[in-house]
Length: 382
Ligand code: ATP
Ligand code: MG
Image: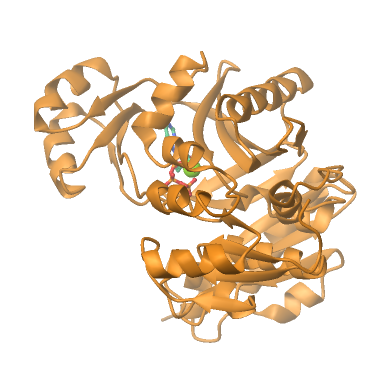
């Protein structure tokens, strides 16, 4: 067991890392962040910042020398860096698990091998695969880059096969997957932690609403029947087991109109849809990451209250007078989390808010009310 007082390493410096640093600090750990970006929300909160590329051998060596264990908040860290670190220091999640989930094709092949359903898809490794993919997948479809996509970036929606070749070029001619667009009843996600001994602790499902490919709102408990929820948790647990995973993992699911669960994607880290655990659960997903990393018993995932989370995107900051925080502080049950990012850009996640209430619907209604009140529509002329 790695106990409070120890120093931990973190690859990646975004908001997920920042929330990990805050949780680690609460338990008395120090954290050193490796991230190339000077404006890193996690590094600003951390005890040290190695500002270097993720494949910088010297920086990785220093991290290994100074830390008792290393984790990651970012699935696009080169798996090779995790492998290098693991020769000197415990690294969780392991390189292999991250490598499987950082490539959509590898991830989907892994899911198929586990017997888990996904949206129908075809691989597009190069222009030679376009015709076969278009024939294999029903349209409307979505062409997605196999790697380095997030928040719906690196994806092009297609209503018919005719646009496929152009879309492939527009994505840079890199490896892609063509996915059938599924008719969704809703989207849900499972966040869980798996310990070194295989024990699993799952959080209640979040129901997720996306806008423009970016998560907008999560609400908990999800409005799906208990049987389906249990099945999602069971599937997520099998995925974690199949990856021999240690740490916090999220699985995004599509719920189809005919009531089936399809795995959308796996995130080898805490997840945006699990932010509610900070305000509404006994042990947050970030404390859970700490516990799994340090070999401590997993924490209590119990939901203390229904909750809704709203992501706060940079668009709100770009308006003349910015977000109207007064409305947030005036609302009973609302909590604000800002990530300290210096520059607001459209679509950039700047923070989130959670509202706790007696029922999911009440939390969701209050969250939507706040969502509107923070950035009221400017419908006056001009
Ligand atoms: P993130 O990493 O932020 O979750 P991403 O860029 O990896 O996002 P996806 O999860 O693949 O993107 O897609 C983002 C959203 O787009 C999904 O949550 C869903 O709302 C919609 N979407 C993606 N693929 C499909 C599909 N095959 N059918 C229907 N909707 C889809
Ligand atoms: Mg996604």
